[in-house]
Amino acid sequence: MQMTRPLTIGRLALPNNLLLAPMAGITNLPVRLMAREQGAALCFTEMVSVNGLVREGQKSFELVRSTPADRPLGIQLFGDDAELLAEGARLVEGDGELIDLNMGCPVRKVVNSGAGSALLREPARVAAIIRSVRRATTLPLTIKIRTGWDEGTTNFLEIGRIAEAEGCDAITLHPRSRARMFEGKADWDQIGALKEALRIPVIGSGDLFSALDVAAMLDRTGCDGVMIARGGLGNPWIFRESLDVFAGREPLLPTPAERGETALRHLELFIATSGERVALREMRKHLCWYARGVAGAARFRALVNLTQSREELNRALHEFFLQEPQS
Image (cartoon, rainbow, N blue to C red; front, top):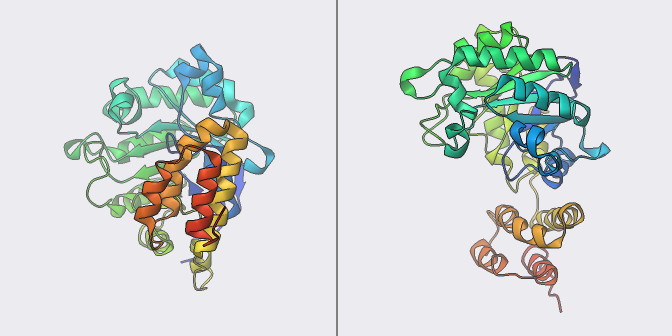
């Protein structure tokens, strides 16, 4: 089968079928730009609370901040109230090219509010939410789901049919139940079953940690595209490597120097968009991810978590990745 191909979601035409997933606390503007440089066709914001958009304002709107280089942009909204979700969609309609509704997040705080994967227990509410948001926006509309609340209530096919009937333009499935969180292996065959059941595009997610995983999911399930999440942490090259594999080329793996140069650019972008204090704190986790697989990573991670200044962090980066002593 042809693995890389254009992907059309509603009126949005993408040059390939590789997407960066929405990840809370992670997929901010710098992360999205790193992924786009390596070939991601569509990137998503962190999930944005519609309660925050409608009632609180500025802090939530910061999550959808973008630049011309960061387009097309998918904006993921979460909440449990159909009218609030519709209002949230109206408020951000000019900030992106696609609206996605989070119906899969398994995190307790989200679930306890009635949002995320808690919605899978109420198919009628899912239908009402999609119907309300569909009326509120002309942008392409998608949802992201899990297979069900637990192993005894697997209802992703029902939810998929509801989504299609209510006007969704595509659906993303992470084939684990809410109860399984991220444990065990994702059951990719369930993605294939959803693809067979629907006419709208189906995007697969779950356990995509390498270009070979991406190719295997597309081949095994027949899904229309893939959404890369944890496999892209500190590894934007997974998009480039996947395109290489699709084209029959040996994937071009990043050298330690390329990792270092990308990490440095990521740091500078983060400082420019969020300020030095926030960037230094938040970049620690990203730098630890960039270091995976490089000799001496454990010592580097320990050092990074102790750094207190931009200068210290720059010095650690140059000495670890670029092997350049810094005075």
